[in-house]
Structure formats: C-alpha cells, structure tokens
Length: 65
Image 1 (cartoon, rainbow, N blue to C red):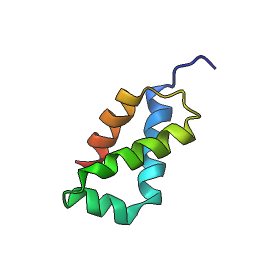
Image 2: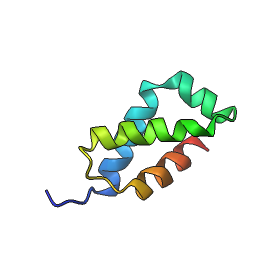
Image 3: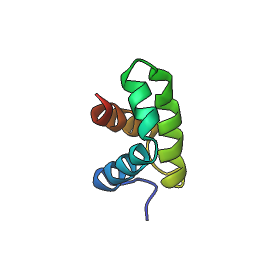
Image 4: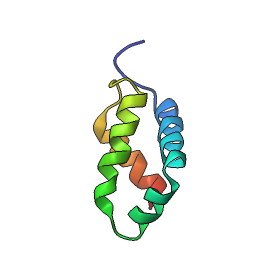
C-alpha cells in the first residue's frame, strides 16, 4: 500500500471512530469543537498514521456538521 489512503477507506474509518464516541459527538455538536482533535487522533491511529490529517479533519467536519 502506498502512503496514501483512499477516500472511501478513510470515510469508513471516520464513521467507525464517531460511532465509538457517541457522547463526545453530542458534546462536539453542542459547541465543544476541541473534540475534533480527539476524533482526528483516533482516525490517525486506525489508519496507522498514513491518512492525510487535512483530509481527516475535512471528512470529520462533514460527518459532524
């Protein structure tokens, strides 16, 4: 695998991470936007550090907003 993660694969990981933290997702939506870092960190772990952080943040915001 090249050091680039496909968008579809990354979307799946983002959704999995958000499902793991339903309370944190609610808190984020109530204004605790700093939790985005928690979600992004978990996605980076699951992607073994090969996902592009900018893509992660973009996708997470799409799912959260």
